Image (tube, rainbow over the protein chains, first blue to last red):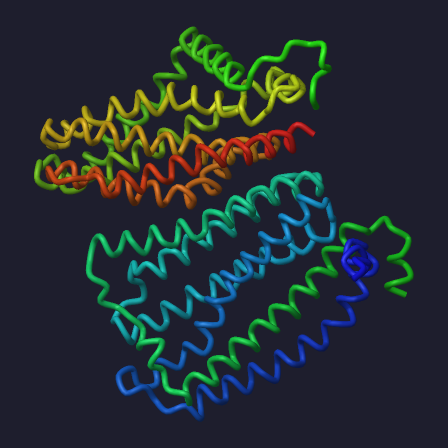
Length: 244
Length: 233
């Protein structure tokens, strides 16, 4: 097997055109799947026997929470690739991921607190999940803050890449320490309706919605990646052709 | 980066020890850097007491949190000085060019930073605890937990301090970078302190804290060295 496909991913013009071609595929399949998932979740699925219709927010909450972690992993992997093989496009991917991941984290927190109000009677409870999600938001903000505090793009890339890699090592530690912190202090009184016992009519729309939101992330990251490449390569001659 | 074979090379451990000796000597000639974190720690404790009440039962209840947040913030403020002076006068650049492993030199540098801030803070912590109505029998436990916690924080913080060297507005950014990563230290540290205050066995959270120390002690200098190289470019 040759590695040309991998090496070509290091070339900004190639990646720019690839992203341009792939975006509609991601966007359309994401749109169809999200609509199908939401229809299945909001209309077809029966109300939960304990939580009534309130549980339906999981069709947005679970995908955003899942993506908040997945995007951080992507960002860390892209940053590590950029740091190790000095691939500029990988740094551009990491830069494109950060604001999206922060938005998903904020959305997961917002939907979580909307879910909390009818279920627990308050907008905010310091549960391990909410707390570690909040810390994740700060990790994203720190990453973006560090990136913004350098004028030189290359230095910003490499410094923030080190932070992203350190963050990848730390995210599980932070997460589990927060889980244990709660164990130590109080019995967990708040559990979502047992994940393993979820009915098929509720589970299928959730999985469809998860896939849809993941593809949606793919679509926006490609759009942001193109903008990022244009900003970085603004002096290059191929841009004139690409935009013509 | 390797020096020519003809030159005698200093073994990395010795080089790290020389860095520690140099930093300690410098710090004792300029003792105000040593005293400021301690003064800050005392001030934070005082402010907590003023904002709560002077009642002993209340104070004893919040003591672990007050001690840990105070010590953590004091150590965080001190982190800002970890590399700044050496970056300004070119010492850090000489370290990077010396042919010695920068990782080992930074290991020494961060260790001396802990000796100069973490150790005094951990000696101060039982005194502060005593003023909050904590029995003196908890002193050893509090001292040990704060010492371990500040060691982990020094190493994790050294990455942040190195990353923000070349950044504009270093101070607040350093806090935002480091404090989320310091959450596990705070969780296990304040838990161990709480158990020590109640007179119970505090070994379990101490062991977790120790695991974090080992992890940060071994990995953080590598990341800090990479970060210093980036900021020197």
